[in-house]
Length: 348
Image 1 (cartoon, one colour):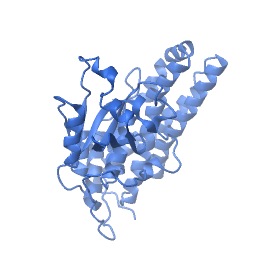
Image 2 (cartoon, helix red, strand yellow; image 1 turned 30 degrees about the vertical axis):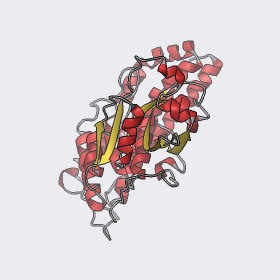
Image 3 (cartoon, helix red, strand yellow; image 1 turned 90 degrees about the vertical axis):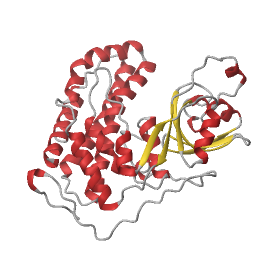
Image 4 (spheres, one colour; image 1 turned 45 degrees about the vertical axis):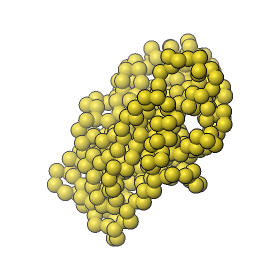
């Protein structure tokens, strides 16, 4: 099903063959049953994990019975920030507009455990920054090895049984025992740190019914028009190219640990952002919007070429020889020009 272009290059969604069923939002007051990751976290992907906040929200929305693909209009605003690409995140106002999901800061005025428990009993999901050292789902990386800060979405805790259920990265997980005590800072070493700051905590709740079907598609397309008006007025990849030689020297000098940090904040954020943009544009096409394949392909090219560039830097480090990745930059710059400007023209 496709939709005709209207005046000024805007898009008109076609009338769906049948109205979509409204999403079902079920508050939880008990441990969540089996949770299969959303389709965005399954199948073939260039970037399996993106950043903890976006991956978390994909699964939280999916857990609410909602489709997170409608929320990715904001990806067109990503810019080069001088030393990194924009750490892309769902704008909270977009979440409320599309899904009726409201996010508020949660005041932690005594016990983190008590405040989380109070909100989960109301069917809310609590987003809290925790120490990845205590997250069993990170066994391949930080679990019982390192202390990275990461965000989880807790929707159930059992203070008596010392167990909880949480969204993190690309799925839903459970922890208990010592890990529970570690997350809530109840271990002996924390008692010796009375000045330890409370973490930043938010909670999300369903403030109203989410949009669905044609209403969801129209609202998402309107958000896209607004975000396109806020897109960079330059090619951010060309700006990155200007400073890349100096950054490359730092990567080769400082070694593997710095490379992982650098690649996460540049290649991964750029590539994953545009891979989600390509999936979002495909979703618009499924809703009846006429979306040229060339625009979708341009976004996906940025995703794949960013990964190629990451591998190139790995090889450069192994050989201890600089690689300015000129052909990668040529491809990335051209793909950006074939994606954002045509999309802006299409949406009016």
